[in-house]
Amino acid sequence: MTREGSATINDARPHACGAKTRAGRPCKNAQMPNGRCRMHGGKSKGPRTPEGIEAIRKAITKHGMRSKSFKTLMGELRYIKRTTRDLLTKLKQVACENPDAIRSGGLDPERVLKMRDLS
Ligand SMILES: [Zn+2]
View 1 (cartoon, protein in one colour):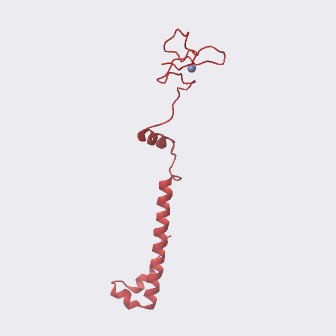
View 2 (cartoon, protein in one colour; view 1 turned 30 degrees about the vertical axis):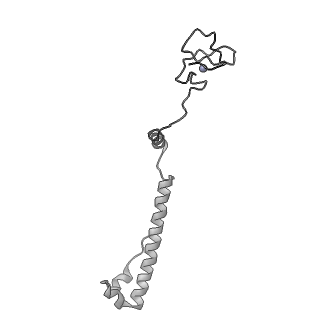
């Protein structure tokens, strides 16, 4: 495989890169599938398939605590914690003001007031 205008015209080696070097001669390195050596355009373009991209992601991930999915999960946990705290505050308020309503729900108002917040 050769490129138009490259220095491979007089190159006797069929599998050489053939790119023009800084010295003006054709490169003699072995060509890659695209016709050039690793230094003249034959290097990796990085992962292309979803499996390859995932393999690179796994290889460079150290702990994952800065990943998008982890941050999303922590945001959801904060929301659950905040909502639970608000509900417990309201439940304690009802237990103080209307203990019969708590008893009708099958709970002991004294026990509700002793419930501790998640922290
Ligand atoms: Zn080369």
